Length: 227
Image (tube, rainbow, N blue to C red; front, side):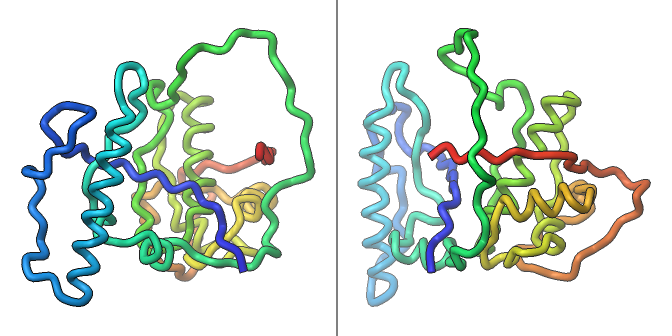
């Protein structure tokens, strides 16, 4: 068994007095007043999280400001607990990438900085809770951005639709981005808006919609293995 290497981005609110290199413990109220047993473990994990937060925030200065870190709902979990709760295991038999594809180079100079969020083509970060469907979130986010770049309209699409309906995947127990893209490409299923098919954090029965309903479909795709 292997763990699928899903990219997990957690945006943390910065706790401090405004300085990027300082952390202000006075602003933090520890909820574990009389730590015993599991409560002691939570406080211990929280204090370790604070140490990491101080370290990573100390590295942000000048032009090297890529993120600001702080306490969130995961801070009381140890790394082992976080992996057990939020990361899933799946068989390595699930396909990951298509055969090697030649990348086309360009002679155009690249800008020193480019952020698609500044172009309003990236939706907000989602909370997948304890559902191991990072594969579905990744696919849907990519389609949202590709559509926004082409149509200049940012739509929030249904992750739950991919979880429930795509084949050769395991719902909230893991899956493959390639399998999901292949399903979309072969069936021409239209992804509806998230508001019409909202995220439930568990797999359910596949819902079908009229072809006349709004939706975004995939006509082709390429998956690069850039490792």
